[in-house]
Image 1 (cartoon, one colour):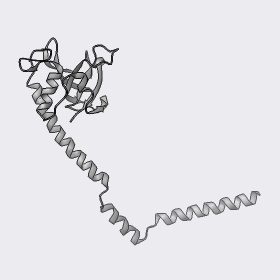
Image 2: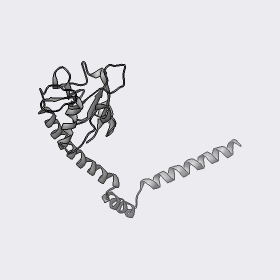
Image 3: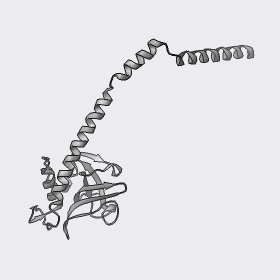
Image 4: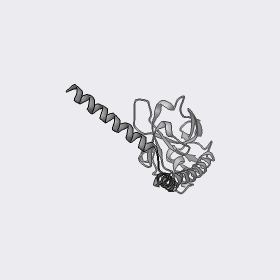
Amino acid sequence: MRIYLTVLLSFSLLLLTSSCKRSRTNTSSDRNSHKDHSAVRSPSDSKKKKEKQNHAANSDKAKKLIKTARSYTGTPYKYGGTSRSGLDCSGLTSISYQAVDITLPRTSQAQSGIGQAVDIDDIEPGDLVFFADNSRSKKITHVGIVTEVDGKNAKFIHASTKLGVVENELLSGYYYPLIVKFRRVL
């Protein structure tokens, strides 16, 4: 029995090594065939190119909506306000997105249900950021727009009840523990 297993094992090793050697040596037709296939674009290449174009267009939209939001800096807070005489948080986001032809629902709670969810590590300028009143709650009561992302630092613009439209640090300080989620609408 031991001899039989030894012969079987030796034969198996012989087959494996010979097939490995064969697969490493290509014939000229194999090499030419390989070159032909490498010149053909895969569907994922065109998808990546399209995603890159969409990202560039969205980046331009993000710049425009952030510029619009910043133009309201200093505007006083007014509950239900949607003009330069006074804005609330969702009024600011609504007006800013209108600048890029996107209509948002009127309340922060309703805005929190549109677009796609974004992880905190993947936020980009133009993303919406939603907050709760306190760190123990998940109830959306406030919204802002991410304006800058630089490594582990980020800023957002919003309509503060005390200061009006201002830009603040997002990933540190007062607002960080109040973050509930991020949404991408662009």
